[in-house]
Amino acid sequence: MRWILLGTVILVQCTMMQSGKQYPEPPVKPTVTAKRGGQGTVSLTVALSGSGNDQSPSLRFVRSLKDMHLIVHVPGTSFYDTLHPLLSSSGQISEELNTASLTIHGEATWENPQGMEFSDLEVRVLITTFDGKKYESVHQFQLPPPQPAQQAQPPLRLEGRVEFEGDSVAVFVALAERLRFLEREYFPTSERLRVKVYDARGTLVWNSAEGRMFLQVIGPVEPQRIGELHRYELRWALRDRRGRKVPPGKYRAELILPIVPAPLKTEVLFSIGEGDE
Image 1: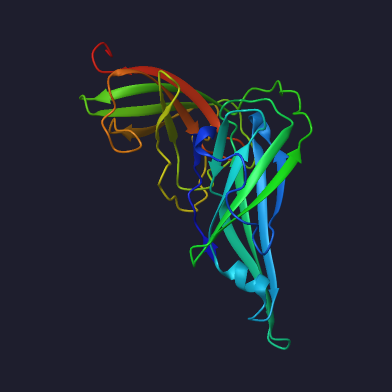
Image 2: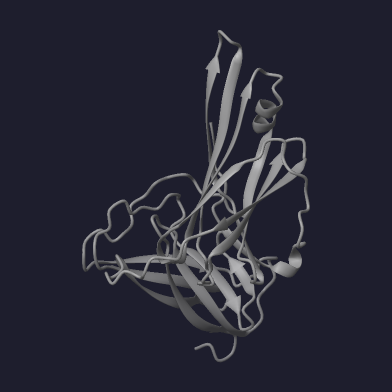
């Protein structure tokens, strides 16, 4: 059995969170691992396991899991990132002993959108059960220094632009040019282009992945041939995260191809309203 949860990253101000724990420890403590990835990212895995008969507290708790998300915090910074890991399950049943085991696995990649340098990392695992109860488990990591940046050129060159359809729709375009072939490169879900829009103060105005669910469908990254181009595009109705029309002004958009092994990103500056021509 699998759960398909949104794999989005939501950036929130630390003032929106309490410095201490908000919920009790879960009856079954999850195991969490953190490993540095490419381009400043961190790969996170989480597992929650239970076993025994039908009355086993650990097994009943794991079966009651409804939702799980991770809060990533770099100590000393003022931002938190919320990740919804992609969950799957595995287990065994012994009819002879009338016992069973069940493990929920979760995987997520923290994109480090601010490009922060760090060694210490805090990861909070927030668990919600079907009866509405919430639990929290805090994990601390000290990661080795990142490897020196590789000199090899990236697999794709991205060029971002914004095109307007009338005065009510913006079309974000990421033009990808294939520079070299990369093994094990793919889209892990049906999401092909993620766009984050920030206003002139740096406040997140809109995130195309927020509140959406994507199918767990592995897809190839286009273009496939060196030298070829592929156009990724996404439309925005010029409304913020609450559905309100955004005011005129200057904006910055991050255009992200959420691919494995590491997302690729480019940025574009644009204006809305008078003088945006």
